[in-house]
Image (cartoon, helix red, strand yellow):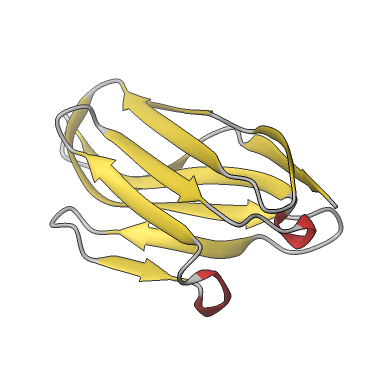
Length: 119
């Protein structure tokens, strides 16, 4: 199973970015998907999650600026980030709880994509 993020980059404060994370491999089904981030010198923190049925959960500090969505047909999760601030600078990781063809369920992670917001 592979999770591949894209869409990161550099943007000025107030700008927007849209991250994508496509999963591939021997996937039977995907349960929850989500995004985490890790700023330099800090612990990894939750950004948002989305259940297979579409129920979403956000870090309180990000509500209203970030929107998570998913396309179950494409096994892809997205993160729309608006009104970006310098403190949003971090490596963003996607994760998914996946049942593979053998039946086992595990959490998988992408390699991360850098988001840099300049003031």
